[in-house]
Length: 77
Image 1 (spheres, helix red, strand yellow):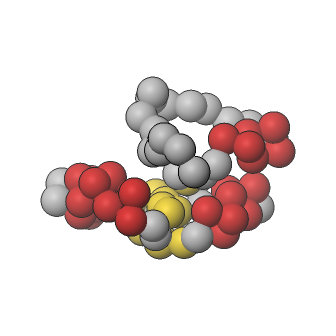
Image 2 (cartoon, one colour; image 1 turned 60 degrees about the vertical axis):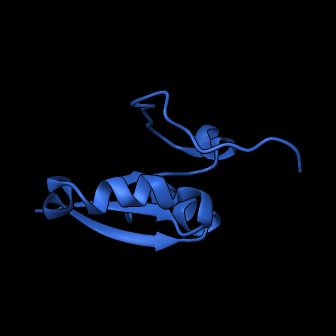
Image 3 (cartoon, helix red, strand yellow; image 1 turned 30 degrees about the horizontal axis):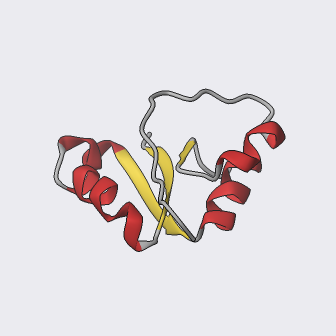
């Protein structure tokens, strides 16, 4: 069974998406491209196994693991 992954469909996630699409991991996952709020909802309601989500939703997750120090960030507004 493939791992269900929800990824943000925004421009700043393109390097992360590129890495996934150009590696063998792509064969092992079912990739969903979503807006951040949908990534969060899918993870909260167990519709996906893994998600790139806003840190603000972490307290809402019943069980969570931060698996790396990778993040997508920006300076300014």
